[in-house]
Image (cartoon, rainbow, N blue to C red; front, side, top):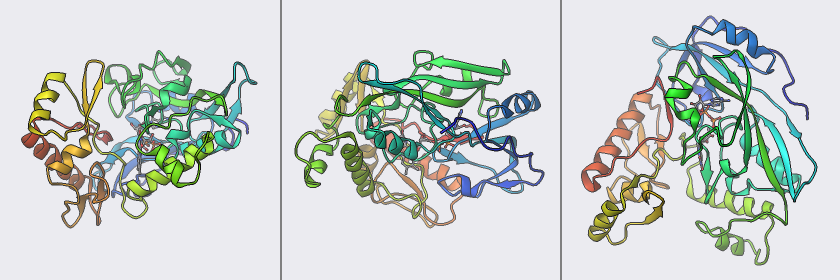
Length: 362
Ligand SMILES: Cc1cc2nc3c(=O)[nH]c(=O)nc-3n(C[C@H](O)[C@H](O)[C@H](O)COP(=O)(O)OP(=O)(O)OC[C@H]3O[C@@H](n4cnc5c(N)ncnc54)[C@H](O)[C@@H]3O)c2cc1C
């Protein structure tokens, strides 16, 4: 499949554009202006046109809380990333293959494509919604794996230089749900991002050589339930992960959500130890520089799993997921998030940091 095909760029709109279908919380949000980018050649023109104007970059809208009514739409041009294409950059070298994927491809479709090619490395990340271009932004992770482990380089459009650039994985400063793209000192504020990801280069394993990760959150048991007892392949691991996700997470089509609403907090070891004295069942995950706690456990223990008002609620399936119950607005979701933060703070002295991005920020 060639990279970056299709039409150039749709003209900017003049009426406020509804973004309700473009965000997985299905919030009634509007933008003053939208441009769909389907070919990288369009970026030079767009870059100059938007040099001094507010802009923001939209992938699949699965990690966004957008606060903007029809009367007061987002005062920024929303750039909708539709860059498509996947290419193999190398043959097999040391049991590994390099693949470049354009940023507007669906993450799930890309993972399934790699598995169909007999490539491994992304199987634990199967089932995560959104686009390939957003995967490095918060360094998506699930079932003990972070995407950074397979990323070799990230191709970007640099709005400061009006040119393409390539960032190595090291340049991207990946951390837990974090990267350079979330650092406002480098990426800028929400309405003036410096870098638009255009493509991502991955280094993947030929299946059979991949160090499969089976030890996390029931993958081994699920494989056994599926009748796979010995040496699963990457496709079977992905199948197990998707099956587990389907059981644990509310379906965003029926219960609009953005997945985990809060990051798992990291606290000093001594603080975690003192909490564990009061709550012996507290799950603790030692890290370098502190102890990670389970945000879902804290929310559940605060009595909020399944809590809901008429519009927004904490999923009864998974305490980390806030859902749009019935025509919720961004303000409803934000009020619920604050309630969760305050209750957990009051009960455990731990402040939960939201995972999704807010437009406008703050
Ligand atoms: C049901 C559900 C389950 C989820 N499970 C997980 C999970 O297991 N693990 C996990 O890590 N996340 C999970 N998520 C969160 C989300 O899917 C990921 O963060 C995903 O990568 C967001 O992709 P997106 O294209 O929708 O990004 P968007 O929501 O459109 O954007 C998110 C941020 O990235 C920026 N961005 C998007 N594309 C680009 C680009 N090309 N260049 C520069 N900036 C860009 C946006 O400006 C915004 O700041 C889940 C979400 C849902 C709804």
